Image (cartoon, rainbow, N blue to C red):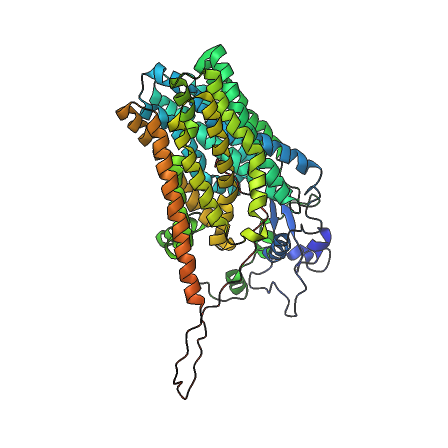
Length: 552
């Protein structure tokens, strides 16, 4: 860093080194001769962050995009402390992502405690799961401002406080706010920031790290219902929620493990004037040479432009309006999710209503989670075979169709053995959906806009999760039969599968017709013309090695 500082004009032990602060602003900052390749200038800010000059950082981003960390930037990636961070992420996903699956165990007791209808009670898990998905853009902003470590710890604190407060709830509406909104938002912060930090700690082994971390959700889906049923039998739902609050506070411990990735040796803080010179933009260069500054936008227009830029970054409405594949897939998945989450909420009360013992009913959800541990990686490997290249959307539609048809098994019989068969088939199709959903999204959207497309995708998905269970609960209140839950789930899943499969089939056929060469005329004219595209097609980028995980 000392060598780097001495290379700056007017700084160091050379002549004029002490005149740096008093130098006129119009003095030239850059030499007239061609400058060498930009070096990396690092400095520690008062809040512990790191400041770098933009030119060198662009070169670092190019190197990082190729899967290799720049020399001297970090010595912990893919080794050492990175494995502790990976273990913390596994535990974090088990605590947050799969936690809403245990609410079905308390469904009957909550309904009896607050004298609530099925629709009113189902709002509780719906709000929790919907906020867990919809809080993604807010979590991204928080990660950019304060970092992953603080975001995870804040999420753990919110989750714990929400569940502790819910144990003192005197009405079902108080549960909506405490365990529903507060705990759901905390789970969102913890889960999504935990997945993000893996991208900093792993480069070469990133795919393996995310695949291993995703097993935490399946393990949690296996254990949470069994633990919930035991605590409910021994202590009741209020004390169970109080204990859950203490358990979820362990997310703060996981966040403490996720310390920031060190960027080389510690350096002296940069002065504000030096940081401004290192980050000079084109406008600063004009000012330094005495040129007139560009016209500054009015504050109102600047705020509107910043708002539009933020929406464009996190919610890509332009992609939704122009990309037919993304449009079809987003609408299809949003419709599918209306029925996808219903069995996870209503399966336990449905089994208890039909004479199955409570501990056996809780075991059904655990069976689904246990099979997911092994079937989800297997489904991902099968979908990655070369024979399925470009056909993942049809495999996804097939998995959705199988999931919808499996719900009809519960309608035929509510015997415990039949319900076990249903859980096996449901979990196999669920594994296919979870393994393929983001792979298909990567295929229909350019990778440089994937994060924006994912933001809008999860927000629309959360709206469906919020509305699906309460509307189905209203149907149960009107008819008095839980079997209509599985009829509704089958309807949403089967119709979504047919919509996506047939729509993409028609879209592929349309694209093939466009690609066919136009027939030539029998009487060609004297002059021949060829069509030249004005906008060249962007190069198709290979999908990244990151596995994205949600509650699906």
